[in-house]
Each structure stands twice: as structure tokens, then as C-alpha cells.
Image (cartoon, rainbow, N blue to C red):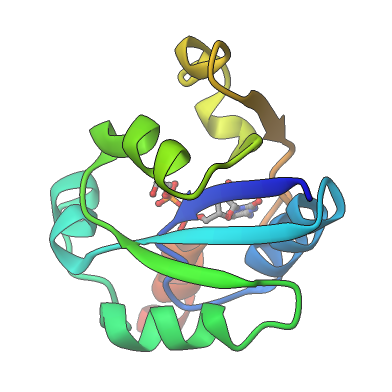
Length: 130
Ligand code: C2G
């Protein structure tokens, strides 16, 4: 049984989110997703997410290729989460390339290519200016 763990805010859920989660699941048998808390998101992006954390968790938890979700409340707790869920592989988008290499002594660290030309920020801007 190979366990994969990944993280994200997944606000205004879109095709880029689907594609990375699907590819992450294909790397193993069980996919665990840490969904950033509203507080963590605010500290990273200086704005509140459009969808609150309970709704983002419920959306991610409803996907057939996601096995379990939890709230990620600190960027610095990756190792704790990896140990807690006995993860064999950490998957991150390639915007984080190299940033989590220090965890390679605990699990495999894989950076997957982001889907081009789509982001939550761009969607919000498009709607705001429509
Ligand atoms: N993603 C993607 N393609 C896009 C947009 C996003 O593959 N066009 C991926 C990101 O690389 C990430 C996941 O979808 O793996 C979730 O994206 P975000 O919500 O933007 O994640 P982020 O805020 O970077 O949170 O602990 C790390 C953070 O929680 C990551």
C-alpha cells in the first residue's frame, strides 16, 4: 500500500486542481490531501479564500480519487503530517520546485507540472471585471 500526500488551498476549484490530484493518485494507492486553513491561506496570499475551509474540504473529499482530507494549518508542519499519515510520497506543484527536497530522507518528493493558463487568481479577476 503506497500512500501519497499533497497540499493546497483548492479555492474556486478548477481543472488544474483536478489534474494534479488525479496524477498524484496515479503514483500510488491512497491519496491524502491537506487543505490549507482559511488562516494559513490569508497569511500566504493576504486575502481570504472565496470558499471557506469547510466547503473546500467537502469539495476535495467528494472526489473519487481522494481518500482522505485534513486541514493544513501550517506550512512548516509537512514532516509531522507525512509521519502522521505514513506517507511514502509527497507531491507538490512545480511552483514549489526544490523547496521540499529536505524531506527526501523521509519520503519521495515529486513535483508535478502545473496546468498552464489557469489559476484561482485569474478566475477571480475575470469574474470581477466581467
Ligand atoms: N495547480 C496546478 N495547476 C494550476 C493551478 C494549481 O497544478 N494551474 C496545483 C498546485 O500546484 C497545487 C494545487 O493545484 O499543487 C493546489 O493549488 P493551490 O490551491 O494554488 O495551492 P497553494 O496555495 O500553492 O497551496 O502547503 C502548500 C500549500 O498549501 C500549497
